[in-house]
Amino acid sequence: MNQQPSSLAADASHTFANPSQRTLDPIYRKIMWRIIPFIFVLWMLAWIDRVNVGFAKLQMQQDLGFSETVYGIGAGIFFLGYFFLEIPSNWLLLRIGARRTLARITLGWGTICVLMMFTHSPAYFYAMRFLLGAFEAGFQPGVLLYLTFWFPAHRRAKAFAWFISASAVSSVVGAPLAGAILNGMHGVNGWAGWQWLFLLEGVPTVLAGVLAVWFLVDKPEQASWLSEQEKRLLQADLEVDRKHAGKREHSFMLAVRSPKLWLLTGIYFGIVAANATLSFFAPTIVRALGPSNPLHIGLLVGVMYVFGAIFQIAIGYSADKRREARMHCAIPVFVGACGLAGVGVFAGSNGVAAFLCLVIAVSGTMGAIPVFWQLPNAYLAGGAAAMGVAFINSVANLAGFGSPYLLGIVKDATGSFNGGLWVVAALEALVAVLIWWRMRRREALSGATATA
Image (cartoon, rainbow, N blue to C red; front, side, top):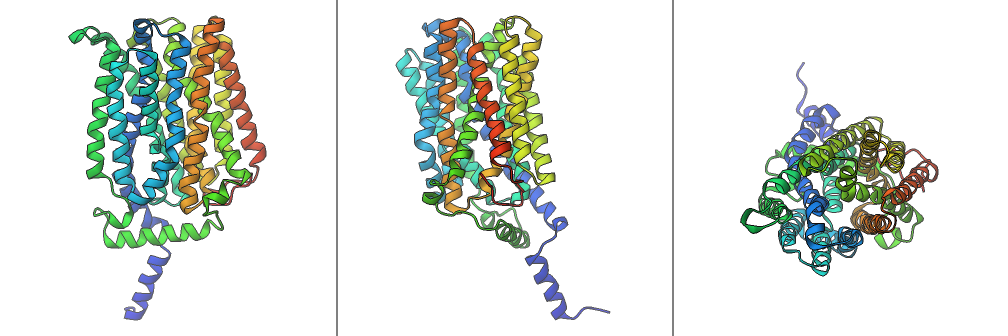
């Protein structure tokens, strides 16, 4: 028997109010394929432009007479720019939209990367690195906030993992590319290989910034590539997710007084310290293990980050499937700490073991990052989420200044990075304990409130 019109209308209303996962899966796949690849490329370019100084150092340090301390300050001062500009950048994103904010950021850091080719003194080096951080500030927290406009909590870890894995893939692509540029372009047009490196890796970023203006869409309701029915289903699902999230803090001024926010900031501080150490010193550490050709060093660093990318995506999928974040963050952090400590133990005595420990350190440290960002979203919402994520990222990224500076001082004083690596490894291990002990309540990715 045919259903009556009123029954059909009721069914349709129920479908929009409570869309099934089978109905929603194709919509989220469409969103993934439309949004993630482009922001993946933007983040990959950001990381290439951020850490290419580690490869430039192989030539630039000798050409310009920079000490390890000068390099460490220059590598790390990037994060001071981050610290001062990240919260204002996310505040601006809420007001002018993600499209214009992310395009502005990309154009700015690409231009500064190109200007790095004219480095001639420590002061210029410091200024350009500070400006690079100032322009890039807000990109990662801005994208993390942007993705919450499109994905419910139980689908975000996977989306975060694909986005953040670009930082690992950047080294897979960028490390061999940097080695090839240093080798192949050195002396062309009278420029050193490191100058060509900044030029050739900065120009594509500027072009990507122009494309961002055209390609990105601020919110689902503005997406011409979604049908009206898909938009309604998506909005209904996101509304259900917001209701299931329970009570969350919407005021940043109240959130910043909470021990939870400071605990999360401290946790991410330790993760960033390890990640910055690996990003800025991996080429130097690999060279100390034996290889001297920049291309060979780049290939080995690329191999390390292949594993980092695999673990980021795999852990993100596992966290979404099990709807659990705490242990999916704590275990990789502890693995990363063990890897870093192992590098300090074996560097100088067993090159193969030291390289394997580098792979473990990269895999664990990078694997934890996407899942970490589920923790603040468990108790922050609205403006507090935008400002809170930026606050965590900006304050914690001061570790990105401190750890390279520390390693530079230790290397100049002792002739070895080992002592600095052990300090960073101990800090990362402490972070794993904090996640396990102080955040014992199970973090459900459906939005359960975090307990610090």
